[in-house]
Image (cartoon, rainbow, N blue to C red; front, side, top):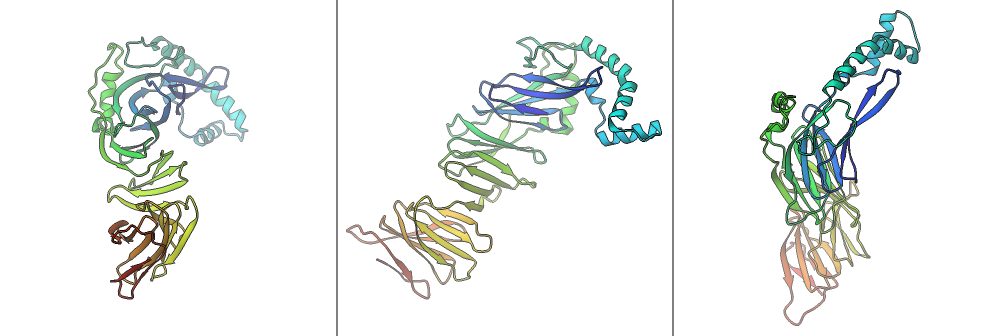
Length: 370
């Protein structure tokens, strides 16, 4: 298990079996960050680790577990079944554990003695950056450092890793998110070939050249802080949550389109209208927002915020999937409900006026507002 903490460190936790037939958790502490760690996870073959701190810095690590840890069976159920089969009797689980512990005690003591002789506490100049005072003979190497800050923002709020595609998605405090791709050197097919150099006991500070992460996509999707990120199994859809706005957004980053944007009006709702097909409805509010809702799911699919004042009325055109909205800012805006964009702004001649209603003719060619 790997974990990150506000104390600026990450820990790797190993489940160790001691001679007293009890199991204890032994941590290894990684100390290289200068801010609280907001994300830590395994990559590659579960021996690679990435940690991300609140200042937008990512470190990539390589860990070699102790020998006794690599000999622990992957499945406890298979261990119990094999022990019962070997003993030829039906025993309770605790009795089976005692029998297995007795059989493995001598071998574990030999391995522990060998591990203790190979245990090296790194110095401050060592690339390990391991600051624990009692190591379970695990070896850790720092592979690379990447700066995930974008657009002048120095605070990262959330991060997620997609293992299949090797993508790291990080959100910043200014509402911007960025997608980074792991370099090929950190993929399982190539990273294992460097273990011999990384963990050679004769090399104090091994040098392995690994490129930093490459940014492949970045976008500002909110004016407030993004507090949480999630990614679907295929890696195509990204879900973002903002606590300040009470907003949920699903974004398809390859085609750069909204899949879902769910949020209620921040103040009074002023108008509502159904689309001619009956599958969509629109609402407006005093907060200057125009929202499109799916009648089938009940979710808000998108929110338009181009109006500078309260939106007083909305109406759908009979044709061409067009939505019209009138506002106290003196404009009537035409929205494309397929591409989710404003393609026309209508204004009246001077003096400036405020509109409280809007209507459209049966052909969708003439618009009236007052």
